[in-house]
Image 1 (cartoon, rainbow, N blue to C red):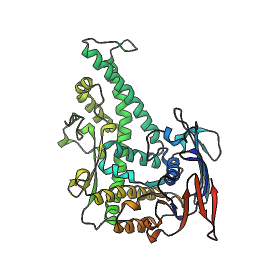
Image 2: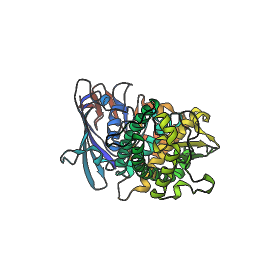
Image 3: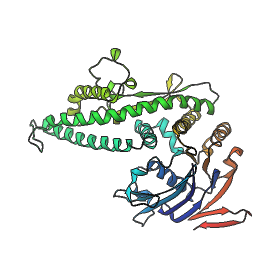
Length: 417
């Protein structure tokens, strides 16, 4: 797969940008701050519907504008498709597929597949568990788009359940039991939400566990490719419903009623069986949840642990090892997408945003040798000399407000202003 054209309207720093692209390596070169990352961010946005830089939509819209539009044409084998995303801060974003009627943005998931490497990826190793959960869930929704709905449903139920827990906590502190909207007590209503949370959460958890199993060998391979192979990279999923994740006080979460020694691993269970474990964990956690006014177990509290040899990568890995592990996670995503390809030309687009400047010479060469095999690689760099020879190809000079592309006769021509 490759993107052959990109059009931006009021996106980030661009009032308007029109850029033609082609298979093979393309390097966007220009000083820091001229908008190189904005271009690749837009391409990634059409794949995952989220930015690798910010968590809200407002920064994506050019200052003074009400809406941003990102439009791109993709080639997948012999098929061509056009995706358009309307970014509407404070309102639902809308999407169009092949100039069709506006629809929910998440209906575009799965059409464009990208893997984006960026300096922010260091947080996958060094940062909080939420970043690693997001990594899994974004990859999951690209591979299986219906899980975008699963995530949204889980977050909705979790929000409602947390609101009830807070209400119950307040009423308990006052020594009273206040009725809910249906005449029952708030605490009794929790049972209903527990059933929904366990059902939806089990589906999300089962999908994550399956994805981790698919990622595990690829992470090990990718890390070995990027390093001298003296240490092995491993993944371990820690589920809070099994008491394997510390809560905010650093104490183990309550375990399910099935003793761990006699319980099969969650990865061997169907979603219905996981839901039963989930309900048992919720029941065990209920007293502490009422005390804290917060849901303490579920996929929103799980951890993807990254291990380098016998030790956790977080806190033990060197800077170079941290970079290698972060890159290995992205390369593993690429390999999983390749495994998942069912038609010719379904290979994901690789995007490397200002990554080579952060790497030493050996890691630059190893990474470039791996990604150069992809159908399309889009790289950003402040200095052309940071790009290894393995990624020789088209260079596009990025200037404030647009780009200056090199014409066949090597005379600069303005493509957008």
